[in-house]
Image (cartoon, rainbow, N blue to C red):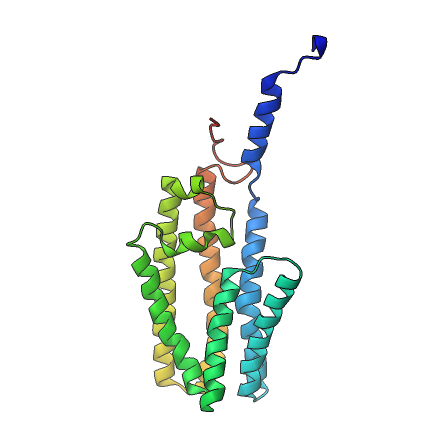
Length: 232
């Protein structure tokens, strides 16, 4: 431009647009969710089942627990964020393992999580009656959330539906666990649980991502897809 003049729109508009596009792509979101499930659910279950197959239930208990503590220590020492899923898994495993060693019995180790799952299912369902369902409270672990996103009607509906979905998933898993504990041996239950737990987590995560992606595209939150938000 003559005289070295700079258009205000040339400076302001690109900045506003850039701020809007700084949303992670779908591939990054899926990768993040997959890593969280792998670390917090799949690997501990595989370790537990492998040690149990070797005939040592106590080694199975401690190996899964040590993996979770190691994963958390590594993420903290390298400055990486620790997912809420890993924290929940670690808390549950710690309590169950301590009690199992203190009582020298593995029965409670398997009954306690089944009863906990019943409580968690009710927690998911009960949070539907609050202003912010449970999924909305942990969504920041998987996607950068701000007040604007939380306030969008479609996003609020998404969180409500996903909370209802997980209330059903956890409740169904709890019912199956209680039934198995009442009908099969502890060893058989442990083997089945090592398959059921990660499978449920993966299937639930896939369904959750599919539903969330549909809502995100309608809101224009995925780069290159959906409507472009109008900037003020």
